[in-house]
Each structure stands twice: as C-alpha cells, then as structure tokens.
Amino acid sequence: DVKVTQSSRYLVKRTGEKVFLECVQDMDHENMFWYRQDPGLGLRLIYFSYDVKMKEKGDIPEGYSVSREKKERFSLILESASTNQTSMYLCASSLSGGAETQYFGPGTRLLVL
Amino acid sequence: AQSVTQPDIHITVSEGASLELRCNYSYGATPYLFWYVQSPGQGLQLLLKYFSGDTLVQGIKGFEAEFKRSQSSFNLRKPSVHWSDAAEYFCAVGAAGGSYIPTFGRGTSLIVHP
Image (cartoon, rainbow over all chains, first blue to last red; front, side, top):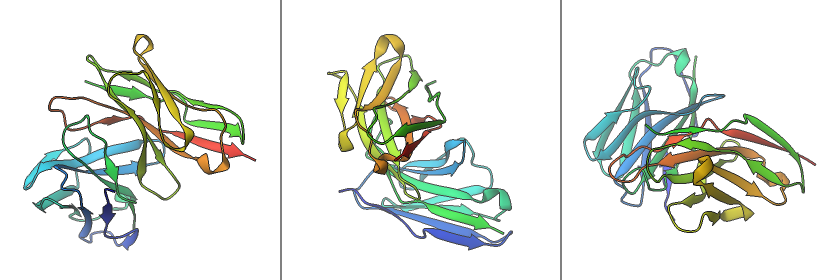
C-alpha cells in the first residue's frame, strides 16, 4: 500500500513564525501536491512538483514556498505565518499525470495565533 | 479547462436508505473521473475511478458510480447507507496526456441519521 505521511497532525504557531510542513511518500511517485482545505472551499492547490527540484504554482501560492530535494519528500514552508493561514493542509502524491489516483496523507491542522 | 460541480453541499439520509451524490464535470475529451471520501480528521481515500470501458464502476465500501457522457455526470450511489459512511465526498476529474493536476469539486458532506 502507498503510504503518505505528514510530519505533524496538529500544529500551533504564532504570527510571524516560519513554519515547515513535511510530507513523505514511499512509492517512488513522480508527482507530489500540497493542498489547503477550508470549509466550503474544498481543496485548493498551493503547489505541486512533478520531479525533484521542480515545482509549479497552484491556485493559491502566495505566502507559501516549497522544496523538493529528494523524490520522496515535499516540504511546504510558510515564510511568515499569518492567522489567515490557519487551515487543514493535505499532502498527496501520484504516479504521474493527471489521470492517476492521488494518495493523500492524513493532513496537518495548523492554527496560527 | 476542466471543472467539476457538486451541486449538493450537504446531504442527509437515514441509515439504511439509498444514497446518490451528484457530480457534473466539464472537459473536452474523455475524462478520467474519481470519487474520494474523507472521514472526519483524515485525508482523502479513493473510493472508485473511471478511465474507460464499462460505465458502471464498482468501488470500495459498497459504492458504485455511473459515467453518463450525455449528461456529463458521474454520480455516486450506494443502495443502503451505514452510519460509518458519514463523511465528506469529493468528485474529481483528471486528464491524460501531460496535465498533472486533477480538478476537485467542493465536496458534499453526508450526514447519516440513525
């Protein structure tokens, strides 16, 4: 079974802090994604990566950056956390292409005070 | 560009009743269609997917979905709902041939009454 793990289930940070969310997948998938999920808005894509060191902006990249130094690991960085970044963050991976099944991690619920 | 509409934000059913969750998509070519389920506090899990062939697709947990090209729909059904089916359900459409990003609907929240 594919496993996608996220470094934290719950995180509380203060405004202005730099926040790192890490995601690791164990199935040699090419693609990795970071989504943000808010009530009534569904899943919104922040960034995705289709290869090591490659990244593409999604729909809402402002205030976020990403890093993919190794194929299995995709990190989301909040450079200076703000209260409007309080949300559920979901990481996903897929083999390749938009026709493939995505495998999701359990999510990180981030609260920024 | 592809898009997905889930017209129902919330659906309430009684345990044992049948269920149909609606999904309409917009895509110019043959779509790749998915239904995912998200239990409270969890990530999304694939229920079923349609790529080609038989338009009635069977999935896990007793769910099925039917692809209707003429209606641009991919509705999810279950003949008898269990309390454990209470969750958020997402329909998604993907594209073959180079597009990496599937498009998700906004989700339908299923509430099950005992």
